Image (cartoon, rainbow, N blue to C red; front, side):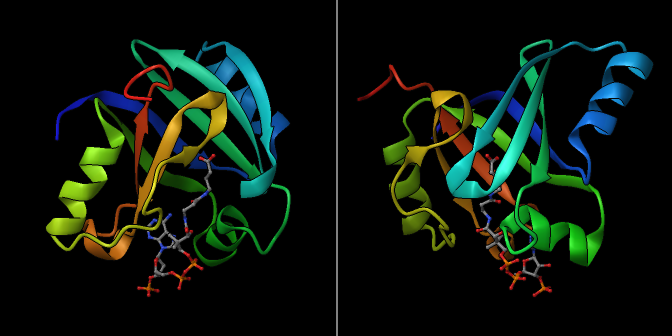
Length: 138
Ligand code: CMX
């Protein structure tokens, strides 16, 4: 498995507009996209910094993964996402190493990327996402 860079850092927020204002007015970043990911029950906002993105995540349902996270732990860093060359073979390799896969097969995530999550119980308590550009290995 070859990770190339940190694709994004996911940050759980209660209010997307208030959070965007902080990232734009205080940190000076520019929100370049807002997207609702219906099956994950989140509204997302993206900022680019170098080759890494910041993904703000506002839950649209309190029972969603991000909704439950905020209720238990409050706002903050929710997950780290690495870019990988070949997601299917990475998942196979991780499965062989007994890493608990939340997604056993790649699925579509925000921005059309192929993604899969690894369970924090097998990743040192860091919810970990792997992302692959959709034009690769299709
Ligand atoms: N980071 C680290 N640990 C986390 C976590 C997170 N983001 N979310 C939950 N956990 C921990 C919990 O604290 C709990 O630990 P303890 O047993 O020590 O209390 C453990 O994981 C299991 O938590 P749980 O409450 O039993 O399970 P949940 O129903 O909250 O599910 C998880 C947790 C990770 C399986 C679920 O959130 C998931 O499937 N996530 C992947 C999908 C996702 O996060 N989607 C939102 C982002 C979408 C996007 O980026 O577009």
